Length: 306
Image (cartoon, rainbow, N blue to C red):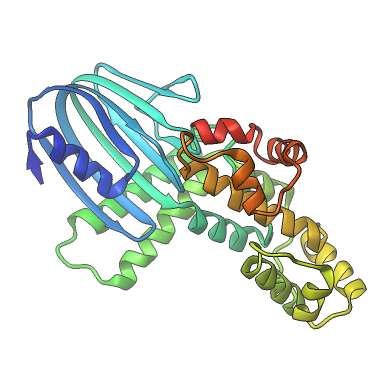
């Protein structure tokens, strides 16, 4: 793909990063050249472009890794300057990129649900949620590992004349695992802690499935126990042993995650924190705000406004 049309540039970036918006563009010279592939929950692209431009990208429900080379590039993420010549991780908060002149970039995006699923499989911790603790690679060694994997992925996804769905799936998995290993997060902390990898017992899996399917309505411990085919007392013991939480603590966490997802996509001029909290079973707004801040490190109103 090659173009000098700003709207087309934005559209092509959005195939990989749906939350991308160009807020300023003063001409495009040389032309935007884009090579990319996108599928449900995954995107990968290389591009070059020359312009004076300001671009904002909201990751939404994605984990993004990017790298940009150019003489005059300024990136701001979580109110901090980012060295774009080194791969950087973007999660939860928008990143603003301003540049002038010619740049060459690459970007990958992964659905957060896929990120958590792979992290849980690799650690054996079925309650793990991947939360970044930094945006730069952990070490030079991890950076080299990520770069080699990215180069292989680029060759297969963007340059190979023929490829099969199986190979594409394997490459996608390799890229996600390399990204998890390369950047600091709750995943790397879990690996360092040496948590044992073991499958959840079947009753606990049944209990979790019931909770996730009925999170929008009233849930009693007896209902979860019946779905798990255990006594309430047996469920309490099995669930805590396997996950480190009680069943009702897991109910609360599922609902907090759902409320957060809704807050992120809500319109602050129409929706309110109170209404969204109530939809997910939180009638006490002060208690909801305290639990929310404890889990996510920010207030619900901050998430709504962002």
